[in-house]
Length: 304
Image (cartoon, rainbow, N blue to C red; front, side, top):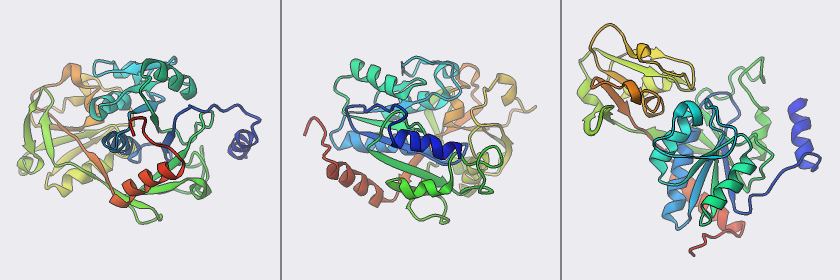
């Protein structure tokens, strides 16, 4: 009831919402925890950039302490700005800004980057204070859990919310109708020297540890298993603030980790630590739909 009243309040303009002045593409999910939102946000930013747009990514910076708008760089501390924004700044090649109030973040971003002509809102499906032009919901293999909302279940909003979004992206599941998406990546690089790379299959036959502090750690472990790597799994809570002791397992066996976790382990990385970058690979029909949808809404890149 509270979720319904909140949405109704914004729909009836009883609660204040702000337009960004440029197109806003909100990417999110209905459940607590990761579902592939961040890789998709990076993919969308790269897609738009390749089509002549000047995109930026805006995030809450979950797990960080920042409240006022701030730009994120490769040198930013994940403890302050969040782990995912640092990852997105590293991978997307476009401005990434964080802050509690997304409308204020977009305003500050546009003052600093007046060429920005589209915003990708990472994990922003429930942030109604900033109006959006396009809504994309990501659903992964966990789907809707037990079907109940917080605190009885994992849902932030009822599953009927999918009826109102512009597109559904089904990440590794056929339990919902939508554009299919998978995560790709089969090459790891050494945490202390990214120039040194190894295919995942080269770890086959070794004793290997794998750690993951993401929404669904099993997804990472299963991804490695599909690549032929037999690992000792070490799951951690999502956004876990890693310490050096968390990566000590009593031997010198290689430790494989996600790119999101690696940004928090940079200070104490060892040559035995390896990182697996992954990228979102949605159905090409999704890319075509998104570009077409922006055009239907009358949006064009400034450079066009």
